[in-house]
Amino acid sequence: ATSTPPRQNTATHVVCRMAGSGGAGRKPRARQGEGGGDSTDADAFLRGAEVGSVEGAATHGERQLLEWAFSHGVARDMPCRPALCAASGCRGMVAMRAIAEGETIISIPQHLLMSADTALQSAEVLALMARARDVGEHLCERQILALHLLLERQMGQKSKWSVFITSIPLSYDTLEYWSEHDVTMLQHAPLILMAQTRRANMRAEFTQLLRLSA
Image 1 (cartoon, helix red, strand yellow):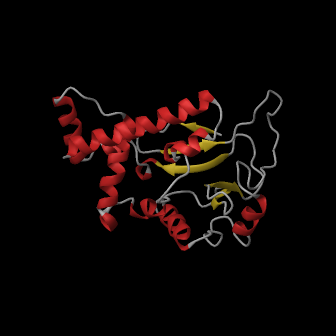
Image 2: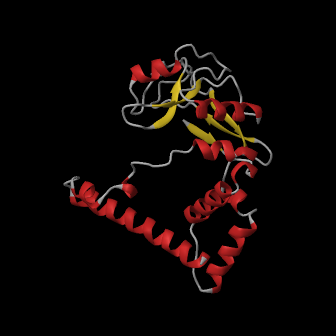
């Protein structure tokens, strides 16, 4: 899939693209559960769901997220739905039907996106960026987005993204969250170094935000 760059006051589109040179005009069958999910879990999750409905959502939180998205301009006729793989705990999207090359998979109004642009509309974010500049430091985009998310979460129901933020998992299993023992179990020096570097970078970025906001 590819993402079409949004224009001002438009939507971000994710469009199906096929690999290889002979795929033009073909209609590939999208496999449910593809991408790490289990097809049985996906089938159970989506059983009885119809395009434009929220009945296939696995939890009350997922149904709330879909209702919120639909009410704010996300197209109801998208050929996929959010899904949670019970075995791995991974969340993603699964296909509801065959998806043709060039078909829009999902279209999201730009005003629903949390981005660096929306972060820079926050006085608190701008103040912390200014404080960093005053001491000769710089905040990366990842730190700005993390700060933006934390500030919006602190607002609770007053945040325009409160339903989305509530749906975000409380924990992850990415490399940054692995213990040192788990990292060494990779048993491959380049991978271990990559994991250690990512963990160290995350700690350094978080520590910098704490220091600047103190």
